[in-house]
Length: 88
Image (cartoon, rainbow, N blue to C red; front, side):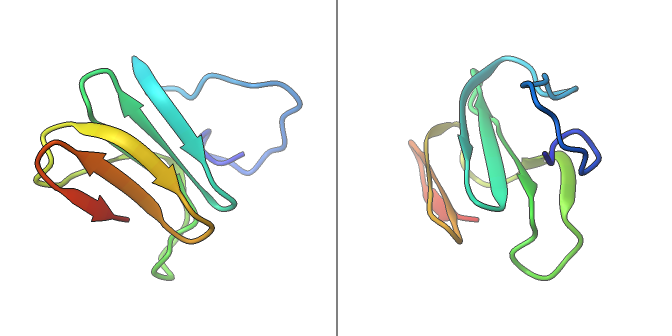
């Protein structure tokens, strides 16, 4: 249940504080991501590079002006946008 700043199990969906105006959401085995209506990408979950897990959503910064689609594999998040695509 990452996204709430802790690892507490919850039996019901709970709104993630600070994550507003979400257009789409995707969850993988160890990571999650959301795109806002303005095209901003937020990611949270297990760090793929051995860093500390992100317990709350972090805005992902890139040269992409607006994310248009998300896809998730077991290991990777792929975000597509009108100007460039990238793998997180």
